[in-house]
Amino acid sequence: DIVLTQTPLSLSVTAGQPASISCKSSQSLLHSDGKNYLYWYLQKPGQPPQLLIADVSNRFSGVSDRFSDSGSGTDFTLKISRVEAEDVGVYYCMQSIQLPHTFGQGTKLEIK
Amino acid sequence: QVHLVESGGGVVQPGRSLRLSCAASGLVFSTYDMHWVRQAPGKGLEWVAAIRFDGKNKFYADSVKGRFTVSRDNSMNTLHLQMNSLRAEDTAVYYCARPERGTYRYSPFDFWGQGTMVTVSS
Image (cartoon, rainbow over all chains, first blue to last red; front, side, top):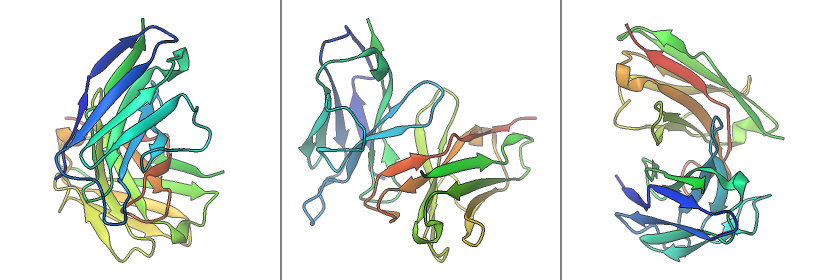
């Protein structure tokens, strides 16, 4: 199985400041079609996960442009340009290049 | 708007069975592969199972293989998860999820249900 390792596991950020989360994969997520099958989700308290970014640099509908990502192969990074109170929750990366689909452990973001 | 509603959760003793359902609306259900994902209390997300759009191919996590069976009724726009020989470690919120591109691989999950809680305890 592909193992996704997120760092840090928790993040405390002052509102208005940037934040960054890393997701490293045990195998390349770059397909021969040129796409990286790595996605980012945010799970707010008491809610199901919500899709933020698909296929690297492809924000899901309605997602703020404060969110961006980068990376290829085995190393990926989610960036929030200016953290807002509504960004609080747990962030997960997920891969779908291979079954079983796997998730990172999650990174909990809180506001200082 | 896509709407997924899970049901069937509850408290069950170890070794017993439970059947979860996911009612789908707002999509052409019969054209989408579908997934089950679970989350143990206070823990992360774990993919459980997937089923092709026509029900002919099914895929399972090793942790549930041989005990869980995913199925679907396209005439009723419903996804099911039959869970047998339940264990304490199966205690979790179970979500059904739709792959954005309809395929079980190479696609993020763009819509999730609210989840149904399964507690396995004596």
